[in-house]
Length: 597
Image 1 (tube, rainbow, N blue to C red):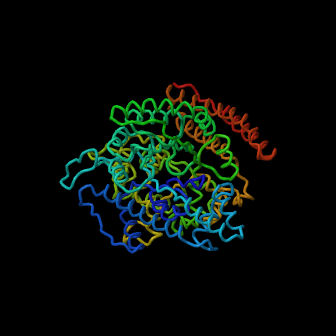
Image 2 (tube, rainbow, N blue to C red):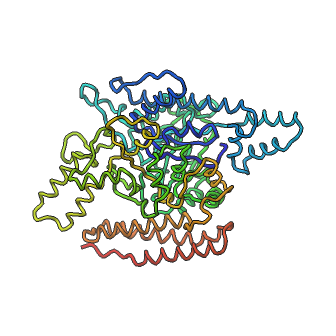
Image 3 (cartoon, rainbow, N blue to C red):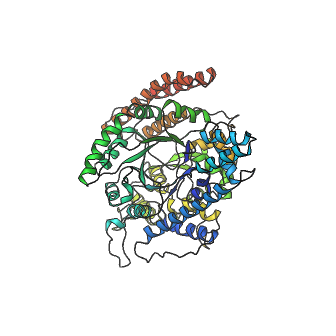
């Protein structure tokens, strides 16, 4: 790879076409393939922009969801290939795309060093030789895709009959990717879905060719070693190799947040590092047996990459992760929301992000999935949610239905963010006599749910002038809390330069180390969770709190010894970390859940 970082998936629409904007420069990025309606509209836009003939795939066509996704991924593949070949043929002149490619690279990259040699030589023959060599060694960034495993609604045909499980949302998305021309990776997130994982076996591209090369790789986005290893073993037993573990902070991330039981990022990375040699050996034993049972052979252990993302904010943090934990790459997500050239953020939301304070970014229960969600209080979708409550009409119209799951009141699943569900649930609450003492808390819990199917797609439609008359203009956005320290609109050069330490965008910002910030998020999360259950504490919940607290204290002990390894930081920086660890420890020591009744 040309770069040591990637751009993770950003909501449904924020990075849906980022590969078209970034891949030619060698920058890998991830597009969500959840929303086929958005994908179809973005496909039409880019098809016409690239002077191709657009053939729509209507929702009445058999297997339309998978076909739409395949068509869009094939389009991105064609566009990026054309861009890349055009860039490769350009002369090495100032302002050219090929020069930009090399200027974005880190100074230590072999290609960047060779590029410098080419610029400095005055021998025309040698310059020409070096230029040809540089052109031949260019690599595109990957066009990777993301599927949230749990977003997997079963679907019905035009006759109303329930379709086979291969037509479920996640399975259709998987098939759309598997049938595409892409040579890239599928990132599976949000935990294990056995049905989806079993379906991977059906597609030839997930198996290695005679040279051991995978046309399509599997990446697991994980938040702890145990669950990662369980999922990888499950897949290995089916002859599916996990080519990368993409470790993400449980809380210091964007989008949905999966709080571990107090396991912090540093200790998790340490465990992956300690088991980096033995893990592939154990997985390969299972994998080889499965491959042999399928009549396939594999001679050597395929590569496993370890990458990390979530809350990285400075070049020094990035370098420390690469150096100390020996990870192969890092992920930088939320900061790229402030880089309009690469992501889709509408102008109004962009202005709100730039002027936001740290308290505007918060972990919420807004997601209909019932999973923690990083919300932004100044988003237009959040403002609309509150306005609807004030008007006595809480909830949203439910059109796309990707997150329907609740059957409390209906035979057919409905979404907890929908107006239908919230009205039914509020009526149930109001019927309780006498009124519960915590009525307001329960009412707020019902109405906190936010429509993400539309909200996370709207910005992409607004930015590309694709919103239709009468469609909701409200935007939901889910940046990680780390974004609060970035307060400008940046160019690609500025953000990439910041990642590699060429410039420092946070030079005058008082920001804690990423590990400290995550720790504080966990302490706050535990404190709020304990307060919420103070009056209804069970033995099971008390044990959960105790384990959570013990794990955080163990993490603090680990960080106290780790501080000495920050050799590239000042003594003042390290001393501040130690003081912050001491403060977090004191906060935890003060948290003692009362005994369950």
